[in-house]
Image (cartoon, rainbow, N blue to C red; front, side, top):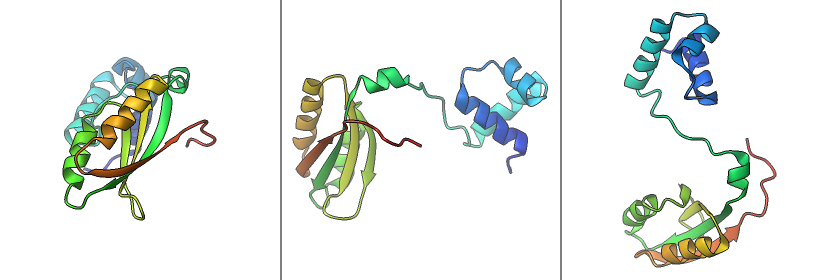
Amino acid sequence: MSRTEKDELLIALLAENARAPVAELARRLGLSRTTVQARIERLEREGVIAGYAVRISEAAERALIRAHILMTVKPKHAARTIAQLKEMREVRTLHSVSGEVDLIAMVAAGSVAALDSVVDRIGELDGVERTQTSIILATKIDR
């Protein structure tokens, strides 16, 4: 089913605050509470809304030590390595890339020691041939 302008606005409102009460969403959309609840359920059923997540405050995020870890992975080991990285809670994002490295992970840890442990664990994964880590000092643009 195609999404309407109201669906898009509902999605935007939920992106701002996924915990907003249905009554508030209904008021802001100019729709009944029952209609908004039905739209949310339809968007979830259709897979448009895949889930709800916690957004960490900027202050809490700034307190973390973040780094990009570039990895070279042995041929035929990529799927297993990716599965192991997916299980590591410190790995925020993982990209497969072209060029000299195969994967780039963005990781976050509570301290330099914790980050060092993450780097060691990644380096010890079967299939990871080499890593290169760059600690993020500051984010200049975040869109």
